Length: 156
Ligand SMILES: Nc1ccn([C@H]2C[C@H](O)[C@@H](COP(=O)(O)O)O2)c(=O)n1
Ligand SMILES: [Zn+2]
Image (cartoon, rainbow, N blue to C red; front, side, top):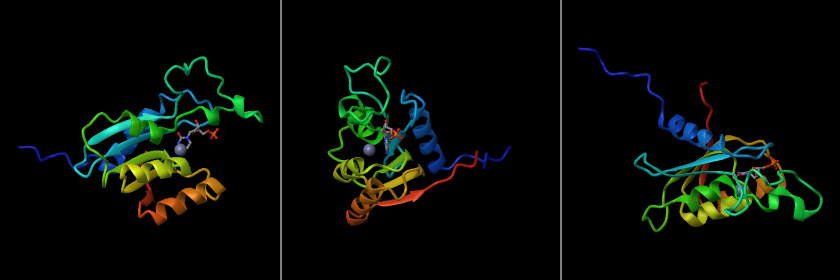
């Protein structure tokens, strides 16, 4: 009788790959972000990616940045983490102790939202805005609110 397979992917890898898959739906030409929220029983609660609000078609949306705030994508896009929380259709009142897997370290607005949703841990892939003011505020919020965070590397 053959033995069981042992070279299965880890839970970290599984959920991060789900987040990466979600990011592939993003129409943002510069930064595509995906998020996957998993509970402590290794069940996926929700996924999301950075995109436009319903009613603002992401195909027609001008995905640029501009000095004029009216024409800057940052003021319109819903972030991947926020979409993952908003997309949740389960019956939990909050996501206490759940982990969010996100392909980019959360911004400070998402950090606040994740805290308030009860997320206990952030696992991230990239931290390309490390050291920026927004990134420092985000880490300050997570630290002060007792949300842990760690970076993962994928083997391939
Ligand atoms: N944790 C994050 C950070 C950023 N986003 C989104 C917001 C924008 O669509 C894009 C960032 O664009 P960039 O300033 O790099 O041109 O990523 C997110 O969803 N989650
Ligand atoms: Zn954000």
